Image 1: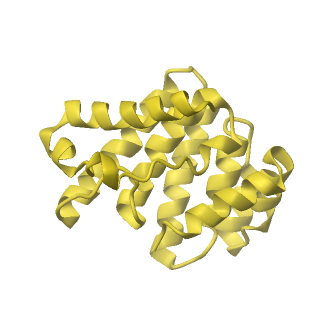
Image 2 (image 1 turned 90 degrees about the horizontal axis):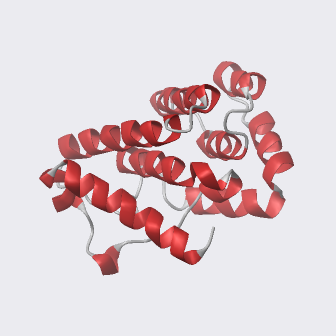
Length: 178
């Protein structure tokens, strides 16, 4: 993704959120405090980048250090994260790819399960979902869901996007989540 496309991605997320609610506009970090780094979208198709990063920002609002937002309280953080999830799903749905939307719904659901159970593996799940969005991850996801084994997801991501790309995404992710 070009640097101008990346800048547009962040501007779009910020502008749409601010237009949706003054509360989200107030939660935006000042320009100099934003960390405009794509994490998982470089692993997948460019057309999905805006939707993926919107959903990932929602995940970070819930479970980590967001790049664009600093909600003032836990209730606002919960609502903002949910708004970003929904808005990202709408962006992906605009492509008419039902399988991609289903994959992202599974991602959000399984990440919530992992967090509730204190199980590792969200990074591999994010990487595989981004790299193979809409192309089927049922078996690797089942290994994580049922046995707590993220290795098949990570292997799938590496096979699709390459070791260096996945290593970079996972390292960035580890630095952002709690």
